[in-house]
Image (cartoon, rainbow, N blue to C red; front, side, top):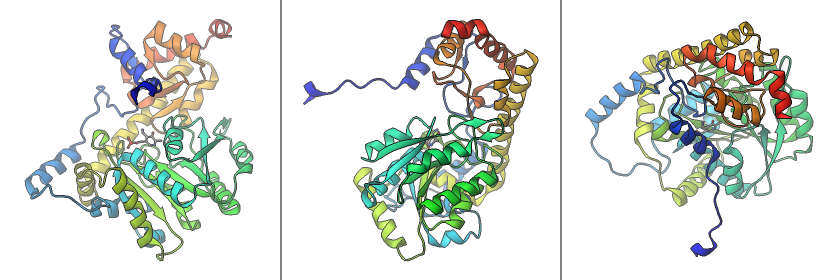
Length: 399
Ligand code: PMP
């Protein structure tokens, strides 16, 4: 059996992380790992989470099995967080707890493969590195549409042109906010046009909500999703609590299926539970129990999340200002309007290599940097390094 084991290439992201760890330069800058860091470079446990854990430990009575759908208070809280209090779609949706946002994507991929195996998944290009592997692991075929920027923001005409070949029943995988890796988010008007496009063509939206609260605010960031939920019969949602609750290693997320009415909900739940049962039976309790506490006592959590969101927005502004000050090309100014933790620099892999080798700045080879990984003291140095590698001499070398 093992003689025929194909060679599996190591994950390039983890290779970069290891290279960073082994780099002995004291002033190296890690912009690879997709986690929030505070101004001292830590990824802290939120105080609201710590308080919740104390309450949970004091009240713990049993570690017996929970429900197949996971923590029911969590599922209820997640559906409200995503759709908004009082939303009409709350009455025609089914939400289950999953193993992080990744687990939600995989459970929904298995769901699509079961119900609609011929559906093509339409994925943004560039897109989140793990979307395609998750979808293909479930046996689904994936095609892409460009997710580019013009002078004003998302180039929606290109999106619409590329989706021209999508057939009714195909699934369009959209990022709810803070697109990874580009930071390019639709405007409210563009969300409306995307909803119209899906309606007209009979496409099913799958909204991946991994950064709610890191763009414009916890409610604002859900506006696109909520518009889809209001206007469309069927919507799929994968949500993660990794970033907005800082629960990364607790693997906490949710999968939601919105149906045309309440009729199919029991069967949808049974189907989702059948899928999880064959995978990991039921999800781990701890992260979801914490999240349920945050929903019950939201004040501290929301204030902490807003502080994180502001820090990311401030870094964007300060980096863009520093790039102007040092005379870097205008192209970099798109950073200023992009949203969330990531942006894609207008640099090629050779320039990213040079950034790493000559300046100790680590981003991924496609140009992605984690804005939330940048410390205030490193902003000017990064701006200078970006100016240097994007200079004409360097571009000639790259060619
Ligand atoms: N979707 C996107 C767009 C992401 O960037 C990520 C991870 N950063 C995920 C899903 C997966 O999140 P989780 O860590 O909760 O599995």
